[in-house]
Length: 430
Image 1: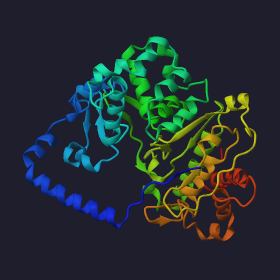
Image 2 (image 1 turned 135 degrees about the vertical axis):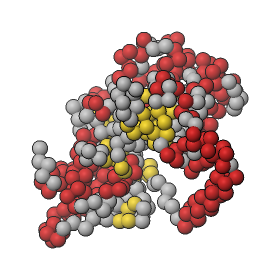
Image 3 (image 1 turned 90 degrees about the vertical axis):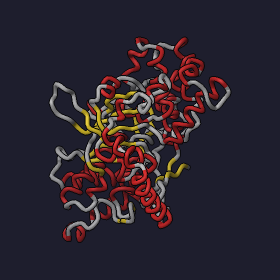
Image 4 (image 1 turned 180 degrees about the vertical axis):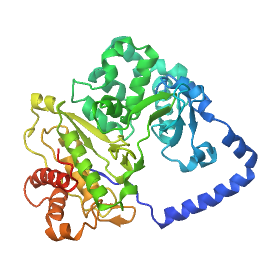
């Protein structure tokens, strides 16, 4: 069984951050001329900052014109490179605008990994190509598996995808590998036109999917088709742009009760959509926390903004291959680990069963019920209900059964009733 537990900040961590901030202030004073220069300069037009020089060992070039023309600019503190050491996830906020549109909109920029992970990526490519940890990536990429695939493959089949991923040893790789190994029905929009790609474009696509499956999830299950993921916009070098959604779900933790009920209903609807849909793909969320969801300021819609840990299973193929116990309903085990955002799961079982309650379990335990803990709080998104609802007891009973069922297969029924009850409470019956 796998357990995913995001680290929890303690006193030592806070002290270290305060010390780091103090050191930063000293550095800012010592380097005030370079600080001013970095504030005035748009580094998003710098090919080396974008790591465009590493292509085709990069994530794409579809947005390079926009970056290099100065249409994308950092917001506020994102311009200060001195702050990069605090930005472990390499996520930035920026403004983007087309000249003919006359306005700007917010976008989120990601390098799809930390500096350490990107350095490991470079080393992996070099070792595979030359046997040495450092090399010229431009010369090395044509000597890797990604290039060899180009000579033999003109369609983005699961076999080609899986072959391109075998070299990757990062922990994140297992999630998407499970899908690659399981399905002959890739949902990648580019799959049908893969044969028309240039060799460098094919290598970039395969490398991106190998390094970070989140790009595959947002591209394969696009928001334009109604999937609850942030929209992928494009890439330049090792900088990827996605649509900015809004504030994190966490910022709504103490919102008015009616708002929290609506958000809870949406979260349960997302759990249902990812579990049961007409495409017969099940998308299981392996990392569920308040930081991985955001809410649109205008439409109030909940969207998944971090799809890094998503496992995709092909129900149609499971029915076809009939692995052991494939038709036995699978119940996820409640994990009372006394930590933030705990989840226990077996990837092997999730990829071998048709009927699984994992998404209901993840949302109820980590976001909605009294078992949810995050940033020192407890009680979940539906904490402190109005007196009449608390006295009725139905909401608490459904949340408890959804998070930690007492009956066999109780979570399946509880999740269904909870969705209906929340819809009723929020006047969202559809």
